Length: 364
Image 1 (cartoon, rainbow, N blue to C red):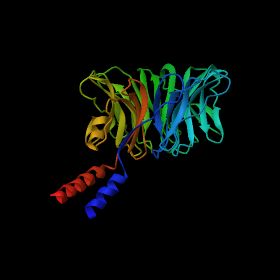
Image 2: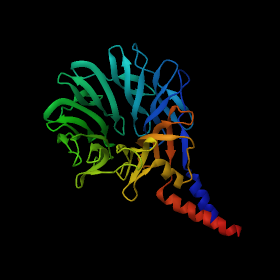
Image 3: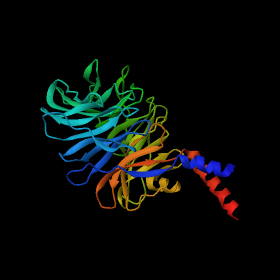
Image 4: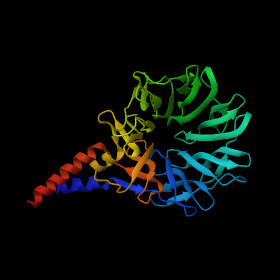
C-alpha cells in the first residue's frame, strides 16, 4: 500500500508535453515566448483572422488572443508576463508604428509610448514579477536605447556603454525588479550588460578566444545569475555569469555546427534553457551544473514524456521553480507551433522508479 501511495503521489505531478495550438485564421503558426513564474500562463503570438496576434495560453482555456493597439496595422506579439500572468507585455502596431505595450485583463492593451527625440519605435521585452516595471528598447535622440518603464515615471532611457556606437537594448529584468540585463555597444563591440539603480549600466565582458560579442537575455530572481550568449573560440555559445565566477560557457549540443544561446533561467539560477545545434538544426536544451547541456527531449524521455514527430527548436521561457519550460518548434505537420513541457521535481524520478520497482516485485 505504501508503494502504491508513493506512485500515486508522484504521478499526481504528471510530467507532460502539451501543444499550444493556433488561433483560427490565416495558416497555422504559434510560438511561446514566455511563461508566468507559477507556470500557469504562457504568452506568445499566433496567426489569427486579422494577422499576427499576441496571445496567452492556459491549460483550462487554451489559446486566447489579446488584440492589438488601436488604429494601426493589425500586428502584435507578447514577449513576457508577470508572476501570475495578470500583466502581459510585448509589441503592437499603433497609429505611429511599432510600440511597446502593457496589457491587463481589466485595462486591455495600452501603448507605452517611446523615448523622446528619435524615430517612433519601442518594444517591451520583459516585466518584473509584480508587473510594475517594464523593460525594452526605444529610439531616442541618441539612437536605439534600453528603457525602464513604470506607471509613475513613464519610459526612462538607461543610456549605453561608453566608447562605441550608441545602441542598447534591455532584454530581461530580475523578478525583484532591481537588475536589468541586455546588450549595448562598447569600445570593444557589442557587450552584455547588467544595470542597477546604484551602478548604472556595466558591461560583463565576453567569453575568451572569440570575436568580441555578447548579449545577456535573462537573469535570476535576485540578479545574481545572468544568462545569454557570447562568441567563444568555437563560435556563438550560451553562457552563465555570476559575480564570483564571471562568464562561463555552457557548451553546445552534439552533432551540428557550434551555435548555442541561453534564453531563460530559473529563479535560483540553477537551471538554464535555450537552444543548441544538432544534426536536426536548432534544438531546445536544458542545462544544470550536474548534467551539463542536454537536449530537452532527452530530459523529457527520462520521465517518460515524448513528442513524436516534433523538433523542439527553442526553449524561450521557464517557470520560477524550473519545472515548466516553454518554447516553439516544428510539429509533425511541419508547422511552427508553441509547446509547454512540465517536469516533476528532481526527486520525482527516483520516487517513480522506486514505486515501479515495488509494483514489479508485487507481480512476481
